[in-house]
Length: 627
Image (tube, rainbow, N blue to C red; front, side, top):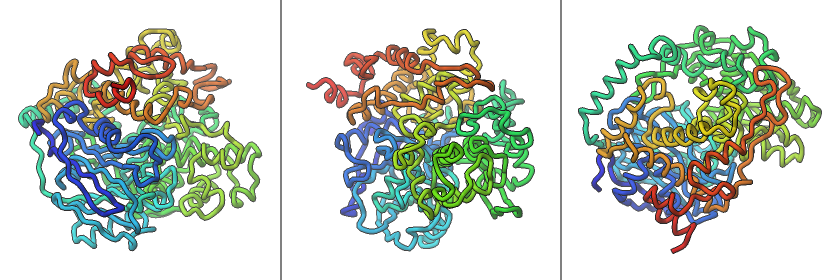
């Protein structure tokens, strides 16, 4: 196989026939596509015929590890779920932390790809390379935690890795996530629905396989550098301790006050919430009330997670994962609410039923704004008075969605865009990018996000590179809002390359806080023996982005198919608040990015020369240019 840091094998499983085939990776494929979303895109491009329906037997869902999984690098635990998205009809990748990625590799494979449709509910067990198919009828309908316990009890092993769906995935909700470690989620884009369409309840992994890094001593030395950075680096007294102690929720209060978080479905301003309502949902305040212990993903030195125990109140929960910032915003400010108990209750429900929290909150926000503007009657909402900030109503509607117990609850399982189409009303209140709900970082504060949300091959993601939501937010206004400024395109392309490599390597997004600049690429080089620190690393990042984009081009995607709601880009502009008067020229930002990438600006098709220079894109060149 020839490339260190890999087992060198993947398996293609056919649920219809209950058979599987073990295949070896070509060493050049591993070198060029690394792991995670890029490697997944390359394999799915080859495995799936063009324009395959997401819920057909020929549709493939993949679970793809990365070189850092199980080879020692700190903050290197993330694996990626890849598929065609039921929401957008295009490419989808969603990654998750916890322990599943390293355990997948221990089972004997770098990746698992699943096609076909089982005649009855099934879970697949990979045990030291051996694969068996198990009847999942007894766990079909179970929530995620109960399913984990039941499978572990059946196998007699509490340490197996399990990626699974809850009832949301079983009913093929377009908001369904793939869950692992009870409260870790590959959440976005409906991957859980793809599993549900295959009657595929869970992928279970166990084994003793080991993967050796090419330069183990270098990995150890670089990990020590990360430790020193945490103690004495420029973020040692600010961002690092905040995330260490309070996780991503430590940013909630400032995000709401600065209108980075969504407020009242992205149409509100900080003054719509009281100071007490904002503080109540913040990480530090909730930690003081309910924090039981810390939680850290595999090999994480930051440990931004925590476990809560809520002993009393309206919604007691024995043990639950602390809400992330996105979940706080999705269930707090964007619903006009400051009820921390309800925020935790919705977070718990989404973990238990297997929902993407961002889309779940966005769908309820759509229903609330439609209701308060008279588009739905109280009878149509199932008797739920969906006024902004009505915490009891929010909880009731969330429960109705989870249980599909009312007509509106059933329809909201489709997400905001599809719900608006079903009811033929309220489309203007579905705040989305290509149909998927917007995450809680506002492009009106950081305009580069508009291009990322709208035009990334996996739209509606704030963790997909580009100009980012931190550095670009603090640019001087004369540059931030000058959409012809060359700095936008330069930062966008450079940011894409960097984040693609981090995702493909299996590194956490918060490696940007916990790992010094340049160390992720050094770690990846130390693991694989391939030098990703220079031009080849840049090239590999852009190849990754282009491979994901090529999947969409083959599906027939055109530029006009990449949409974004006018409200989120300031069309019309806000009349008050921190984003007052901001209107983004999102198409001009995209023009600059495409030109910098060497793509045709109108068609988004990369030139043949660009594809040839990237290398490893022979199949794409043939499909686009023939020969």
